[in-house]
Image (cartoon, rainbow, N blue to C red; front, side, top):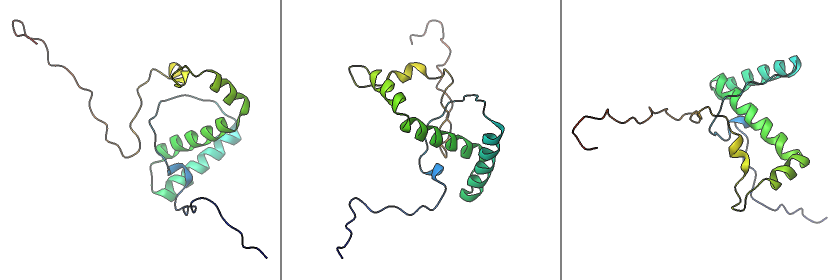
Length: 126
């Protein structure tokens, strides 16, 4: 019986909920969903936050990001449209569709105050 050869790097053992594997920037969106989906989402977020000793809002954001990202990757028709909307430089046009709301820092990052210029003083060159 031939020995099975595995190609690629070994899989890393999962030690926390998948949603906490990667953190990204964030924008705020309001969405509607079915009552069952909302209930399942609430139960998953509560479980994941407790399992990773994390904030439930972070767990909610990461869960939605992960789930929607996988959904978009599996939708072949959507991917065809997105591929058709890239410019000559290879950048996606999706940046034009982003919310005007500022992105919040990733989990664990410290928010910094925006830089402001001191008020102009008459007679003093700036």
